[in-house]
Image (cartoon, rainbow, N blue to C red; front, side):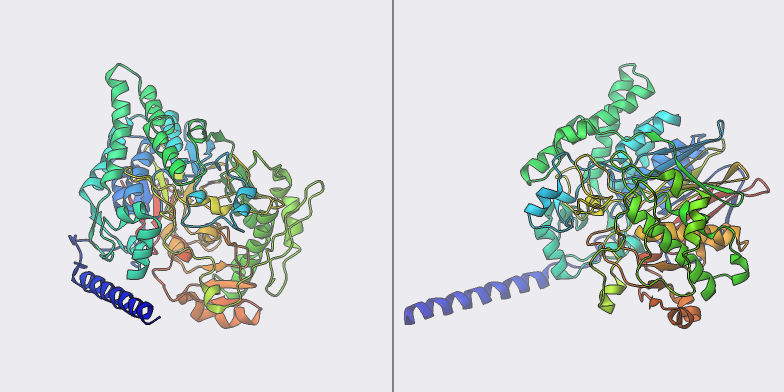
Length: 628
């Protein structure tokens, strides 16, 4: 026994010695910035109203806006500029909007006057079933797990957009993204916010997802992320270059531009990239196969449509929450919002009730239309909106109201079993650490517009050696077979990102989008009302303080909510918190303002009555407007 205790003591001392040595080594490792770059962050700063005569772009980072602007200067179309800007955004904001994640998109053709939607959300792998997740012990789709990965959508969107109205080669449009991925760019305030880890978190990150940590920590798990340090993505640069090379091979052989575009798509979905993704899933016990990739398609669709007075709203299909703006605004139509006063307690209460009624219907009826019969004609009718309007009350709903009853349709219960009760948890229940989304909107000199909401996050394993983040969008599914948005093989989750185009009196008026999860539609509704009801210019409308209902179940697993929860930005909270609390709201004020990702980061472009182009860029993030 004494010998055994002596051995244990020696082992313990040896372990303590190793821990001490590791701590000494860690202390001696370099932890400062590698290569600080000069940069002035745009987050939290007031931005000027952009006024132009020919074209405009608003994007989530200044490098993305500049890449799109350069294409427009060369005479490129909105489609050309959107692709260049998107790829550059995938580099400079890739922790929030990765290549090749989701990219919901709307396109307005000025020649035909038509608005078209493109399906920019990937499908669940064919091997993904609720039974498989439940057998593994999961009640919701897990984060930081390869099973959270959808089949990629963005490359399909890019090629479809170029086929629709592209005039330049993919190689030319990808060049700015490739260059900045190789040479690097300064880590801006939002990337810094999204990638801030404690030393223990960095070690855990490296153990849990070594390839993802290698890419974002640049191979040094001990070195913290530093604001304005140089960030490079050489693997992603090589991948984009390989796609460009596939196109150039076809063009050099005499192929057409469209055949070159197809070569890009084939290289991704049927070539070496698809093979690498499938191999990663095979080795790591994933669900995605080569067949899932080779057979993937998005597709053009007729956009959803609703109206508010002289304004017509176009949105993506029910694989997204693109129906939310029409639902909310049609409930509000006819109410005298202006007399209530902008952001008064009565106004906030009224708009919040319309939002929560719409959320109840979203939870009950909205999902991938290829799998679910969605009663769109009824939901988007004025008669239905009038019935929902009758549900509005003088006090906060508290729990989310019931969905509307629609004959022949079974509504999913809007209220799950997991409300947040702890105040700290409630504050961050709908906040997803280390992730966001971004936005992109273009209006070209020919009058065409493209608007996108690209997204996906490094919260699942990256593809080794390719610099590709496949995201965690599967966790917007429910693992409840009775839920309208339940997981099924080949189904699309109802993703939060969506794009919006607005007409006024039958003519193009505005394109806009925002990050923000369940806040997205709420932010876009508020920006629109700021303009249409309160007469603000587009920059004022984008910059004004916002409110955010969190009483609906979060679209992200574990789908929590706060009974009567209402978040307010600090400038607004000072004025209305007490009055709204008296109406029964559970008021939340996030202390991270202005680095608070809860309230969106809108980018918007519209044509004024004077024929000039006006653009607004949100001060809440690095969002930047440019043009001529």
